[in-house]
Length: 390
Image (tube, rainbow, N blue to C red; front, side):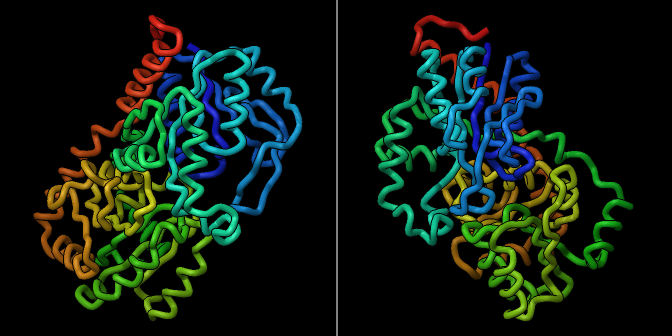
């Protein structure tokens, strides 16, 4: 079967959407499917590299690194029409979604869409929230998704939101999978020493880490604010903030204002191939984000054997098991309480770590991809009747 995946964002950009798409692409190829990815060129120039087709694009200032398809006909689109994919799987809601719809209309192919983003949490990036109002998000989403053949979402939280918007197409809940092998591998002692030395962290220090995109919607400012209470309880503790993004300078300013420079370390952007090492050196992974549709970093932490302390959000239901692989907090005081509880009880920490690895196994990219393939089969059968995926 020929499958076309479309997305506005792909490598070299690094985020959860890109990771999800790459894992799906890789597993589909491993299962002998013929797969191509249509995306926007990060340099603006049209090109094809292997299975990746880059459309001509232009930068726009509505969001960091945002680009849109250049407004003229594109030879790559015509090539993909001639290729005649059996299934089109769009992954973002902008330029390439409409390119996918155009291709689908020309060859009468079914189109399914994965809804990755809680847009109401990101409107501040669009001209300070003045371009699109929250009240319009649901209407736009409904119009887009109801014109397709089906929808994939990672959690029940996202499904409920789309139903509230009025989406009436089949909504398939499929938790995004990750490459577990990337995170379960051990970290050598000399590698750990080298990282700690580079960061200026002592081997005896306890480390709690946030790993991910540095955006306002990730609510890292709450982690920094609540970390004050942790420092008051535990002397040799460091907060490691791993990643880059548009809100980085704001967080650095907050750290200075709260006089936490000696206790909080920023790493900046880390090579994705090296990220697993930062989960491995951490005693606890922390996040206060409530803007996730699923949150791959939770699963990455668990697969690394790193207990999680996070702000409660419906997206973690079934992922973070209270008192088994981590803790979720609802009241501010609980943040420092749970961290103190874990760091002062080595037996508890080890039990949480073991259960974390066990929990992560059901979120493998292999299981994820097989469920997506089953969804393709259902969509094809609905559209054409009695077509079997081969």
